[in-house]
Length: 291
Ligand SMILES: [Zn+2]
Image (cartoon, rainbow, N blue to C red):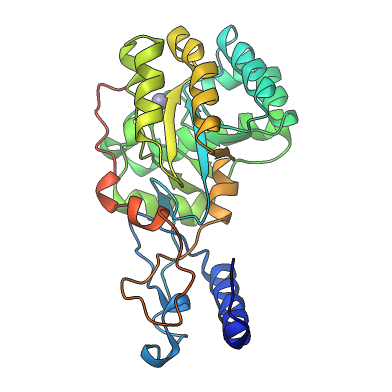
């Protein structure tokens, strides 16, 4: 970062303001709550940094980050056969991922969930039996979440903080009460290789590599052999492009407000390509045929 010395103090104070806003608001780009660019707007056009306060983001399909960070996610496991193979591949590439586990599977193989956490991965809730929440009653959704939360807690000693609703099926109202009751953030995705259709490892790899941007949350499933076969080359290619893998919670913690559209003389250091590449149009339209 190059700062002209005469502007250093103002940059410094704005950096602290940005940090403060980030801490108090959990501000990050999220599909449901665009964040006003207060912290990077030039002083002259920013009469009041305190208002409007960005709503706390509870739902993400990607995160606006200032750097080449991405989160790889694996749903529907653990698979007693495939997930350990995947953990070996992740370890060999020094990559931390996020596993959205199904409660039924986690109960059957808690030792795999434990191993994943021990090796630096994050565990999220993906329901007990993989139903589509949007069509369900609140008590039925609550049972799906609580049973899975209990199994994860029993395996790793703490509850998850993330939920991926099966099929991405969830209403705005459900997001609100689930976040209020369980404290979960709702995690969707912006990269979908459709690996559940089993198109073959090279197709899975090329779709992921082509679609991934800074801040991407990549969907895949550790229950399909072709997905596991695709991963070594996928990881090689993404790392060769300079991407760095973090867990979803780490990615969210790196979230920044969106860069301002206008560029004044004070804005000598706008965030790079990530702002332009992250478009709300990347919001997924999950298909109910997706396992
Ligand atoms: Zn799933």
